[in-house]
Length: 545
Image 1 (cartoon, rainbow, N blue to C red):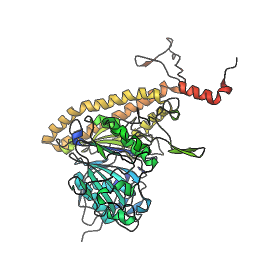
Image 2: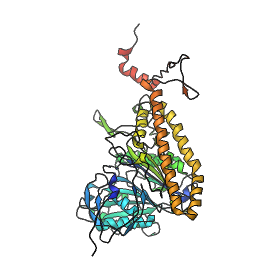
Image 3: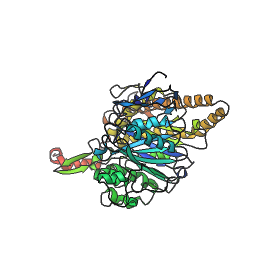
Image 4: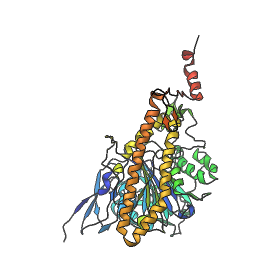
């Protein structure tokens, strides 16, 4: 018998992560401009340091054990048998273009099994090392929790490969009741979908195994617990295991609604649902009125409900500079009345974000692109990191800085510096940020065909050479964009110093003709702000003579 090995979890490099407020958007290959499949992710957390983790493929001796640590906290949960061989994983995509993301919805608290070994984060990254396709991933994930127990609360998973896109929702069965109840639905090729911290699967086809699979007890367990007593055909997974309150509608489902509304003109019919006035839920998926590109998916991640009734720039909470952000907590009380803040897709506390692009007509090494960014999706730059890359750029290295140690070579800290400056003077600074962001992303989009042609030419004769080429390109673009973002931050600091705006001509700051700075602009505040100040403190501030 071979020696008994203990393998410590390499996937737990993100030690303190609390990604329990995330957004994922999905698109089938028939809904996209070039036949790609897409899923996105915003790993939103107040304690997550945005970085990129690479797990190389490996082979293990017989009887090797894998130590599972909770992704959110680093807490050891137990050991499971390791498989003989694992696949390489770059971030949330593996070498076969399989991608998995998530959002947490919690659900019924009594169903959390604190004796389980597999938490939602470990479930994703263990599966990425063991599965090649979305269907295989669903089996690996459900087998793991059945055998070892599910430690986390309710979760939605986006699971996609170059051909198919699925949503799987899962919740445990309570302490000492090993396993989970779950359902997985394939998103039709010509449709888009989304989930954002609220269970999205209501009724589902009970006899369509090609497009829907579920645990055998998903309905009977709900009956046993008293969550459901109707006909099987009327069973709603979401209503049984995660009944939505007003906060779930406005803070979670509204994000799905806003994404759908960009590409489907029937969404205003569901406004009453978002406001808690109707019980007709938003569909799990819709057919878009046009096909989406990778850039469309990136831009959709930058949403603040613009041009909707929930537009965050259109109330006094936006302040004088139209800031589409609300700092926590999400609710507040005035005169015994409780109010809620809007919670948009783009939010300030994102650790990292991605758009996973998968293409079935290209070799896996070339077809899978993890468009990766850090911090706020609105002000990040999505960098092309190919799934075959074997090196993490220094700017995304988990050891380069931390939440308690600022590093001027860390993309996370550079992007946070820029974003936090913008939160103070948003309507001015975003006009300087957006052109740089668009220039970088447009360059990546323009270069992508030629880069991939060169990689494919190499791949035909030397796969390893193609992988080295794509690795070098991915690393170089990450480093280049981070350096450019640091230059942008320096420019913003200079231009907006002390609340003034330095004057510019032809891209240069102006001087007075004698080598000294030209007098800056004093932009003041918006009329709405001045009116509010006059109403609140007008008598004190009024000019009397």
